[in-house]
Amino acid sequence: MALIVSLLTLAVELAVVDALEQGTAHDLADVVIVVVLFGAVPAAAIGSIGAFVVHFVTRGASSQWPAVMLASAVGLVAGLIVWRGDFGVAVLLGVAAAVGRLAVVPCARHRAT
Picture 1: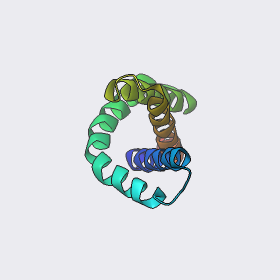
Picture 2 (picture 1 turned 180 degrees about the horizontal axis):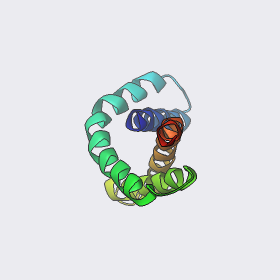
Picture 3 (picture 1 turned 45 degrees about the vertical axis):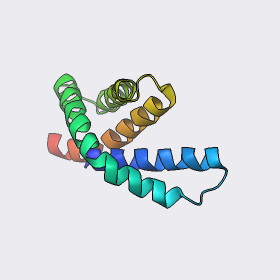
Picture 4 (picture 1 turned 90 degrees about the horizontal axis):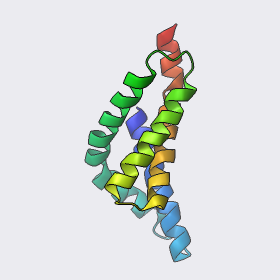
């Protein structure tokens, strides 16, 4: 679920950036669809590795916030690697990763009890 939420968040973020750059939201839905279609496989591959790292490092944490913050950092680093230093897009990926991890906090809390 976190990967899907992250991918959708990134797609919307990129669509909004595109709309702001073009001065119109005419292509907003098209950008979201294209990012989801072409980003699903890379998101699954990169996101699975990131999710494993976050889980492994924070498995003993009593709070979920370290996992959310680490997901953001892992997303930022992955963004810098994938987009070769484009810091703006890397930040968007970091935010998307944090939102994705935040989406599964209720599931993690339920599983811990």
